[in-house]
Length: 312
Image (tube, helix red, strand yellow):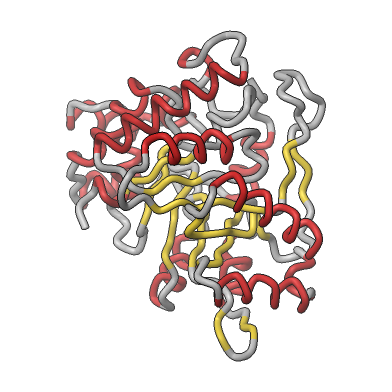
């Protein structure tokens, strides 16, 4: 599989008017009405598909991302697209930039059943992978056998069941989730986690998940835009040597992980996407990777800084 085939598009920053990605605001309309954001989503999806990208990731909590994606799929009827989405958070921002709360988390059987039905309706038969959104070690899912059995039923019906992770405890969560079984069968077949050159704490656990047969997706590879807009000196140095932007170098570092099956891009415009896609032509050698290898910060520090990013 070539590098372009390993890239996917994530819709976290396109399905709602406000999000925490740095460098997003200048690429989008100032008012960000529903029609404007739908048009922006379709423009990125058109450009991504034309470039050869065949994986798109959404979530119930990404505002209208599933609605926008479902409309695009119906209108374009593209071949060979894998669609993943997530349940567990509800979008409550009411399409307001300054909403006091944008999303609310709940890992319950009732929330899963409601959101699974909603996702299926919006995506109209295109759902390939359904993931628990931001699973953590303290999630009630680990003790809720009825919820686990409901997820296993979806897997038996042909929808791949996975989970995403966030927070400083990603590695422990991944290991516990990979070991989870229902009726003697592993429950999860995919894992989507945050990995970037600043936050590498889940790497060993993700490699173990890959070795166990799970498909690994990497998210927030640009650290919510920080690696593109204010990259560390090491990233700037490698980017200068390669003649590309720092975003391409950060993405190339993720693509250099052989256990990463899909690396998600969060571009919000075709121009931003094209800049990101140059990563597919960037070859990082051991010296490049070593230069960036010391950039990782303690996960507690990384996630504390991420929590301070404003919704814009």
